[in-house]
Image 1 (cartoon, rainbow, N blue to C red):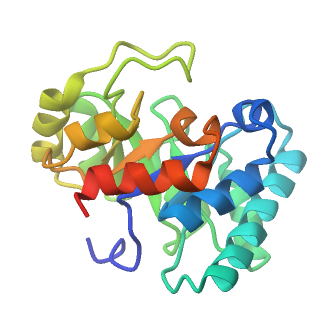
Image 2: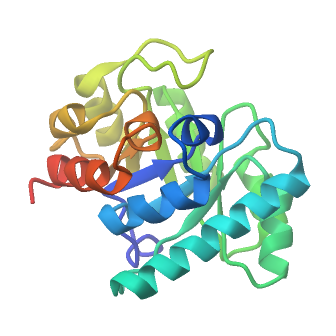
Length: 227
């Protein structure tokens, strides 16, 4: 856990540009409100943006998080992950913008991503099976796994059925790596995942579509941590 130690993964926001727009906010505004409410990690995800537009989106999120941390006196660091766009992450890093990467099973292999990024950035990987967990461990390149989908979700059109808290707990126990649960999680379900062995829960629509992302984030984090 040493590389993750500076961060709080209890609540991990994954952004959805269309959902934020539907709620009348930008991705950066949503991320800032979520961080103010207790989100400790933000992953920027947009499958349709060009690389150039995606880079601007990530920079807007980085700037918004820096502003809200100053305004709210938030001492903790809030890492920003980019979803899939490894070369965008590399280029941002070269320009002094610290970002991390989350990849899926159909993206470049973790070892290849590590070679491209260098040793500093964290690498997260989506997993759903024991075999995928084993491969993540053996790669030596993965810092964190996203386990799921925990519940049925409409956020990803091709997502399989939710595996439930019991299966999340079993996979977390054999992971050998820190894990966060993802998929269809709201405040009530975050409470169900407390004690399953994951270090946090991921939220997409529960925050991006919320009337008040700050309040929604505070409720979800409290539900998971019991604080």
